[in-house]
Image 1: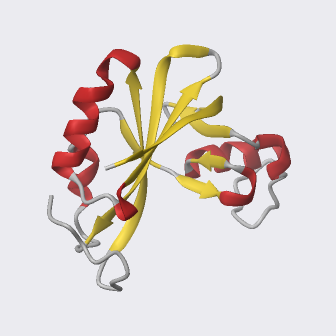
Image 2 (image 1 turned 60 degrees about the vertical axis):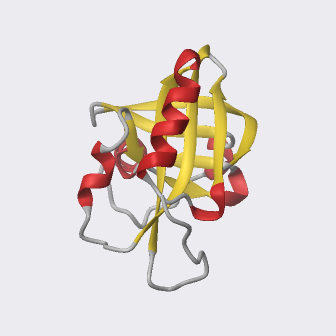
Length: 144
């Protein structure tokens, strides 16, 4: 894809997460490069502590059209995530709703989350129902 001016306010960013098997790394990286403009040209390569044959790629994409919801279909096994930087925690909104539902009985977004419990963890859900915690290790920062 073409180079963007990363400081431009014309673009919004989305943090994406792609789940792959180790053997798919080169092919998926090529697919990501061909389909997205990656903010600052970096992809973070994480491994799953419990499944060493699975990688998790996280990367910020630049979008010039906020109405383009098709970007999730460009690379298989990709979801939108969010990040709590100071704890190295990654999460989906469904996962936060599950935490609040378990702890407080409803999913009010204003309840506090004890992020220390989720340091170096990716929080997601199994089909939007049950909380799934994936302990992660940063393997590499890939420069494009």
